[in-house]
Length: 318
Image 1 (cartoon, helix red, strand yellow):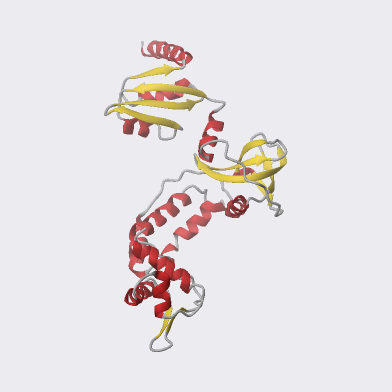
Image 2 (cartoon, one colour; image 1 turned 90 degrees about the vertical axis):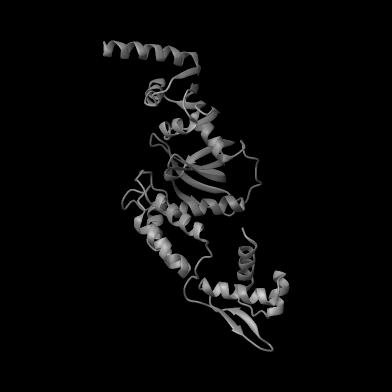
């Protein structure tokens, strides 16, 4: 963040209290000259913030009480990133499904209303010409996200009904910690009070959330990050495979873009892939489209399955 942006945000924070400030008072608070304060006030006005000025002895600056939300202080790249982010999130929602994806779709259609005038044409152009390919994901309620986020931030207990994959519903009492987005799904990492262990919950399977207001003492996370813990848990029932691929890491990443894997470049045209898969056949067929040699380092049973697959394909070709 630049010094100018930091100073503008600090100035805006003072003015949003609704108080009247003299020029010297603001200059002292911002550790800037009165001339710099005047320039910053003009910048805020350019962004659309209605700053009143009373010149002369007894003069002051005051932010007028407006009826509309003032424009957000974005630079050019931030404005484009916001529009693109909303567009991508909106593409994950089925039509008329509701939830956070639909909310993003509505915001995507009117974000330019909250941007400074100088950025509106650029944001409108991006919005009008941007299409994100649909990747349908289960709808997640924006209110549920916000409620659990607030409980986690305040270290407050939460209770909810949870429906498992097989349709079984149970009441859960938890200490919420993190919400993680992975593979187009939202997950809650929480300490399950009844099971005395860490658990992850799909947010689209959570309902009837209640936050009673009782607090808990935070525990250390069970991994370096919630995302890392979630990846490990999702991978537990699957098979770990390590491969050496004679192709650039970028090509391999493109071929395995829908796979949860780690790709480590070893040379310009060689990399190591560590992944968790349900079947070796699926992995081998995806790598076959690379038109590059590869070797399975582990496990040994995957090599056996490759030999069987090669024999079967050879018979088909013969």
